[in-house]
Image 1: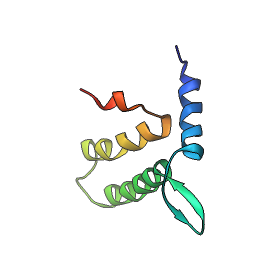
Image 2: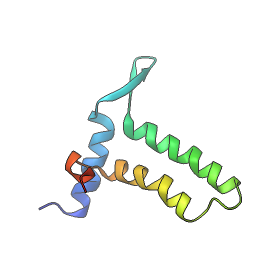
Image 3: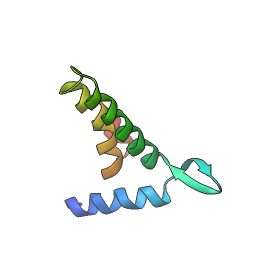
Image 4: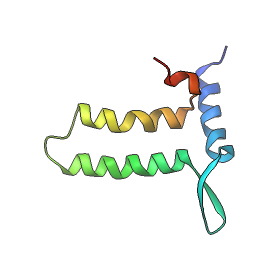
Length: 78
């Protein structure tokens, strides 16, 4: 059984050891980094557009939170 810090550590390891989506100047970029940057830009978009707060912000941030703290493929099943 994993504790909360074990899941945090697994998420950190996934950033550095996960399969790269692409590479920039020979440096591999993982999906976690891509999702965090997309969440940052999405947060700016939601924050700058009136009426998009609340549920829209949660819908955008949920995949980012899942990617930061790690996940397994069976977590995507209903």
